[in-house]
Length: 121
Image 1: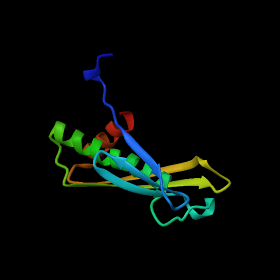
Image 2 (image 1 turned 60 degrees about the vertical axis):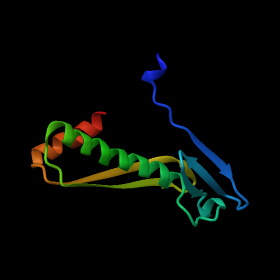
Image 3 (image 1 turned 180 degrees about the vertical axis):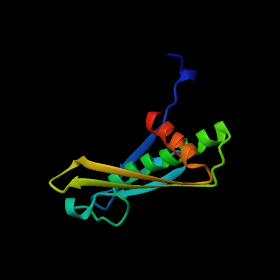
């Protein structure tokens, strides 16, 4: 595959003097991520699961927003709320993830079509 066909994301994560804390550099942004307190971390900043799930919900917002723009569907606002459930004994596995999309502007049928686009892409 040609290099102009690839998208490359780079992140640098570094430990800190605070055990259970990492500083993550994404382009020119820094994001502090803590291990949760129940795993021995400070739990003051967002956790790895929070960061991951924020990416998933942001993807929902941006894909739906882009699809509305590309298809000429009026979309005044989109909100995606996400709730993820994990067993405290094994937090590496999500038991359930629920996403709720709230769209203002499109008809019900248009909104369903926009969310279906997210679900299939």
